Length: 139
Image 1 (spheres, helix red, strand yellow):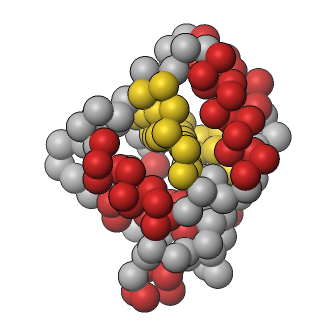
Image 2 (cartoon, helix red, strand yellow; image 1 turned 45 degrees about the vertical axis):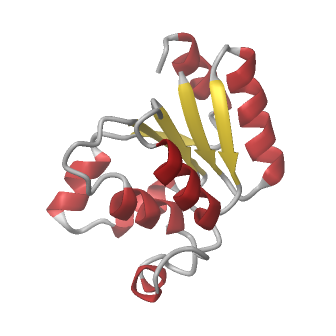
Image 3 (cartoon, helix red, strand yellow; image 1 turned 180 degrees about the horizontal axis):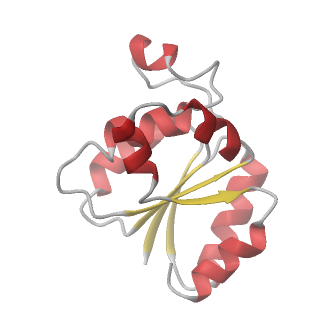
């Protein structure tokens, strides 16, 4: 499985990558939205899964998108919904892996966004064992 991971905390990013690679997955890591935009565009037809943190530096988003990020707290969600989930034909599995899952849920008021979120696996960063379990069952 080819997995694209976005997290700007390098320690977390490398630990996730190592875990995925140890389970036989091919991993592309990105530490910024800017690099994720590039990698996603280059590889989007070959990516099986995205793992995205919520709290990110919003560099790479438009000014309008940055205003929606709650000071960067939800930048990963803004990127995901605007660049991946808005495509009619998206089939990539998505995992949001963040300490701010509750904040994301509270921020959503639009029924379309709530519907999009229902198709995503949400995992709190304190539940790393859940990621391992998902991986062993091929996500």
